[in-house]
Every structure is written in structure tokens, then in C-alpha cells.
Amino acid sequence: EDQVTQSPEALRLQEGESSSLNCSYTVSGLRGLFWYRQDPGKGPEFLFTLYSAGEEKEKERLKATLTKKESFLHITAPKPEDSATYLCAVQENEKLTFGTGTRLTIIP
Amino acid sequence: EAGVAQSPRYKIIEKRQSVAFWCNPISGHATLYWYQQILGQGPKLLIQFQNNGVVDDSQLPKDRFSAERLKGVDSTLKIQPAKLEDSAVYLCASSLSGGRETQYFGPGTRLLVL
Image (cartoon, rainbow over all chains, first blue to last red; front, side, top):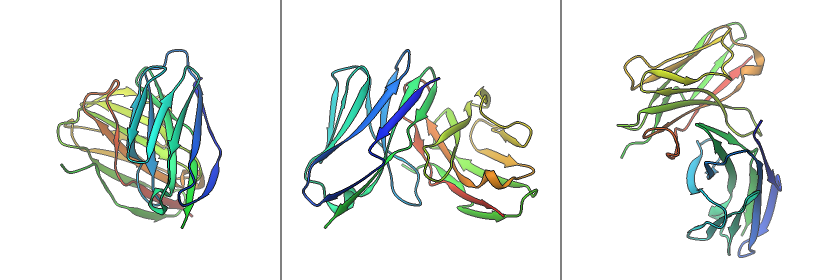
């Protein structure tokens, strides 16, 4: 069965303090790795899709990278509005399997 | 472009009662998904529709959960009878055609079973 593990479970950073979130996975045939952001009381909001090892994508202060066993979401100089839960999901066949998320808090 | 719509946003029921949730996907999206998200966990797929046919319902507790998408657009998810452990957020998502296409999520329905 697919397994997706995210770490850390929670992360508190000062505004401007860069860091990385980790998503490790075990699937036999990865079709895609997805990153979503989820704010309290809302549905997940799509951020990135990565398809193959070595691929990178960027959006504002976020950059996602992918290796054969894990993905990182790098956050550069975060702002308080970046506070949210970040979910990763892996796709094998048609189905998305989600991790439990990293709850990120940026302190002004 | 309008996103995925869901209603109601909140529902509180007693155990053993029934409840139904409604979802309207993004216009033109053929694939519709229902997920269950328990507090502190990631979403778990319950059922996937391609147009009005079921693609995957392997994790749907069929003794109490049912879902339909009669005209290939809107969908309803029903729980009857509800149990305490069904308390969760029920998320609907849609994608253009399934496969590697991005899934876009609605705001969810928060269910509390007392």
C-alpha cells in the first residue's frame, strides 16, 4: 500500500526565516506528486505537481523539488500569510494518497 | 471561473440519523471525487466518478455510505445511519478528465455526529 509521510508535523518560524518541509513516499510507480495548501475551514488549494525526479517548480516564496524517494517544499523568507497546513499527495494509478500535512506558523 | 461548490457547509446530527451532501464540480470537469478528512489527517478518497460511472469506490463503507452522479454533473453523498466516527470534513474535488489532471477541491462540509 502507498505510504506518504510528512515531516515535521508542525513548524513555527519567524517571519523571514527560511526552511523546508519534507514529504517521503513509497510507491511502486509514481505518476505525480502534488502539493496543496489548506487554510483552516477551507478545502485544499493546489500549489504544484511534480512528475519526475530532478524536477523543480517555483511560485512566489515556495519551491518544490522531487527525488526518487521524497519531495521538499522550500519556503524562502516566509510571511505571516504563508501560515497554513501544507499537504503532499502521491498518485499511483488514478488515486491520490495524502500525507497528514505539516502545520506551518509564521510569527510576525 | 467558478470553483467546486458544496452544501451545506456545516451539519450537526444525532447518531443513527441520515445526512446528505451536495457537490457541483467545475464546469466541464468529467471526474468527480469525494474525500473524507478526519481532524489532523489528510483527505482519504471515498469514491471517484468518471462522468456518471464509478471508477473507484474501494474505500467507501457501502453498508452506510452511498453516492450518485446521475447526469454526470452534480453529485450527492449520503450517510445512513451515521456513526460517531463519521464526524469529519467531507470534501468534493473535480478534475478535467482524471488521470494526471489536477484535482480542485471545494470548501468541504463539516459533519458533527453527536
